[in-house]
Length: 420
Image (cartoon, rainbow, N blue to C red; front, side, top):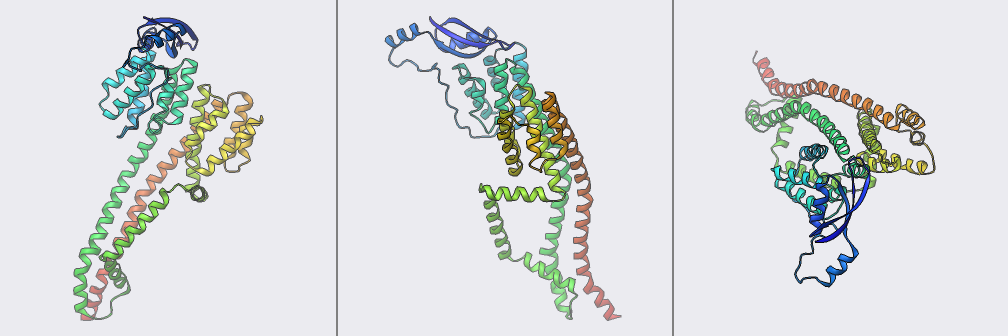
């Protein structure tokens, strides 16, 4: 049996140190976890290390070193709901007194997604080898973003890992509910658009060519709407037109996929400058940023680190740059709210409430108020937009179909007038 020194955290957040005997480092980590502690560092005593170095058996396993195993690239899909469920299940198990190592093992056993199961097993190995849980999650940024890792790290440091996991889980659930509500609201308009587009293409590609033969046999000058419709029908049946449209679409997509900071900044300024869409975008970005910052501050993370971690959740590069510019003023002892007010892009309601929260020492509550206000504003804007979208689409489709019908019937009316 070897002797290991360990440093671990209790649920109350206190750091403890001690000595434990085990055959391997893996077994030492398991024993510390079974005591109800969260292992932070486990290393073999100096005397035991020297003895082991002189008595090393060739071919012995190197597993158990202090360096955590590197994360392996995962190919496959893990849904956001699985990540959210993982956080809630892990928080429940830890709150029930289950050691974190055993809790990860339990969740990995019941997972039906092979990609997710493989990732959890890799995290399990890292934690078992002495790596912090947050560091293990940070190896998979596509599944665990910086916000998730920061909150977990704060929970490990304070000894309230279960509370931090519940906070980030509730945050993710709220974001998923908003996205789900928007998607469900857009399903009916999308089906209408597809049906209308299919109807128009069918009439232009199949109905109009047959009517063209009738019109050509009748002779005479065709009305202007009929001429326009005939020209559009010919374009719709021309393969060159479709080929050019596909090439242009691919070029546009490739340009958007290229990460160009100048183009992204110009696009962000353009969107924010639009009359209705700009205000809607600003509300969504403010709500997302302030909610994220509220969670981080409640977890005990300093304001400077909080802004650095929360800024990437803002997709608008213009707003993100304005937020990061405030860091210089804050490092020099300035106020976040007053510094943000200089940008002129954020509303006075937000900057004034931030200043009041800083002065009263209740910045987290001020951020929560701002997030609640703009979340309500965003939800109301989405509801109004989706309620107006359906009648506008019906009106647009009716105008297009009406134009096609009139253009087809006008020659018939003229023939009847000539006959009479």
